Image 1 (cartoon, helix red, strand yellow):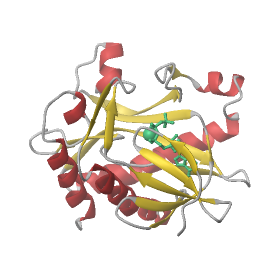
Image 2 (cartoon, helix red, strand yellow; image 1 turned 45 degrees about the vertical axis):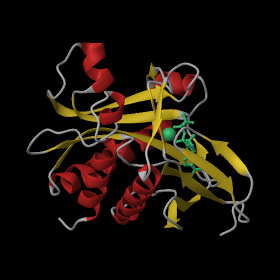
Image 3 (cartoon, helix red, strand yellow; image 1 turned 45 degrees about the horizontal axis):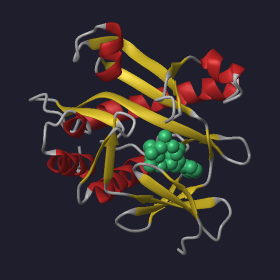
Image 4 (cartoon, protein in one colour; image 1 turned 135 degrees about the vertical axis):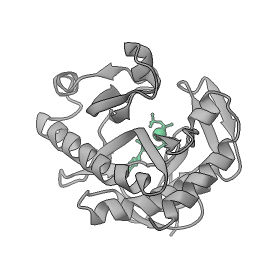
Length: 237
Ligand SMILES: Nc1ncnc2c1ncn2[C@@H]1O[C@H](COP(=O)(O)OP(=O)(O)OP(=O)(O)O)[C@@H](O)[C@H]1O
Ligand SMILES: [Mg+2]
């Protein structure tokens, strides 16, 4: 697949045009950033690991009835996806209190939530991805109310697939962040990635963190944790 013009370079990936107007190639980089890019690092294998984890999960989500942008894995670091218009709203699904939720509400990390919590943030690096609600997104024209209803439904379907999937592989899925996009016909699909960059994964037995918090919190062992997550994701239940 010939890569065309670079459409977008983010912190973790590059998005390229292709000869096909409705398809992009996403290249996963080894760069890691945290706290709105104030902290930067990189390690060999990160891009390949996140590409492989996403490429393993998205077809299974499709099979479970969740439409996604994913088409195929092309190489170690590249995948072919459907080009979408990204809805500028990050969707966070929480099963257990952690991270910004714990900080904001004074709830100890690790406190189980009695039902899943869906949160929305405005995708804006300049503003540090501030928390919003769905009224804000509609009022400012970022999505329609119908889009947001569909996005919430899909986000919870993703949760219903992922929680038992990871539990069967010894991982407690604490929370995760999704991005959705619109196809030219208007259909909402799951876009971006699902990886240790975008999820909190805690080992079910030991509670050990197997995700980007190892990098964010200077715990060390991030390369090993990501590699372990790739092994668990790809292993049969
Ligand atoms: N199918 C797709 N079509 C178009 N854009 C996509 C698609 N999937 C993901 N993207 C966008 O590509 C970019 C991926 O790059 P990366 O994850 O590195 O961004 P980022 O640094 O996290 O910044 P951002 O805040 O823009 O997400 C994101 O902006 C994401 O929204
Ligand atoms: Mg991103």
